[in-house]
Image (cartoon, rainbow, N blue to C red):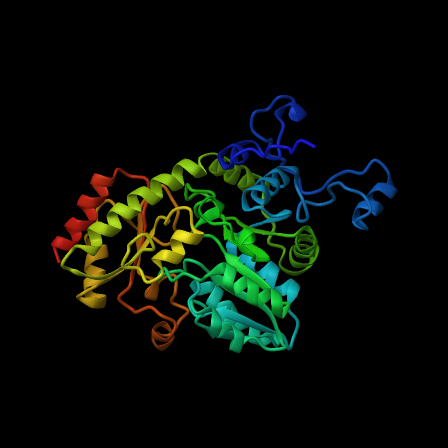
Length: 396
């Protein structure tokens, strides 16, 4: 029997889940601006609410525009199904609140995005859920960290903000043997650079605000997993618990972003790798954290599980925090702003901005200093960015 050929990544990012001829020939999926949906008969509504019949009932649960995006994201990540949410934190809370009960435990990597850390460290314990933070860059540590109460292991790779990597396949094997769900935040890489589900992870989450959208004009998130899990996240996590559904308009913006994802990520990666080498060679720089550098302690792991090395760079300056502030204030092309993955190059100070939920002691314990600077490399010309960044360093 002849196998059905699957289209390539870029083709699916443009076409998956949508046929213009089904919508009067409209090239782009229509934006369905509706909160609710009519039923032809009372029984139809009852059957849809009972899950016995396919169809839309209310846009918190599903919307035709959002469905196209979900189909496309599932295909790109290699998952059975996807759930689009109103933000990255909406995606993470939909997963955690659905799968966890009082008395359960989460094992998390010691370095996470500030709001993810704040949720796990400060807030989940109010609901009887404990979190154990460990160094998941050593997979063997997970063997000691897991307990009978563990339900979820969660990590980012590369980590925000200091670019540590976790061996997804090695961690996934241990989670599978223990019967716990492995959740990977794939925001930094996107499915173009890394596909955690294919490496054994159970659930992938994204802040689609970042590279998937790519233009700094929306807030969005996504979860990709098996259909049974996605149904739970949709009908429990979103419908009943956090309500963080994606709007049809934001879905259309993410769909637009996906059309150029491959091109943009190639450019982000190419420019970031050249800039990382430039920064590493500057006398004012103490350390550059970028997986594409051979000096990165996990360069070989990055080469094995990532297609390319991404567009994010972290660096420490020899002058510490004061030098970092002067450096950020000295740039003229790069933009001082949080977020990442935009066309514009963004520079920010994690300790006082995105990771301010950590205390100074926690930042040191969790692997990054107050002097760390994070750079999201944009789509500007390389020569212009080089002149801006190295010129700001020269002026120190």
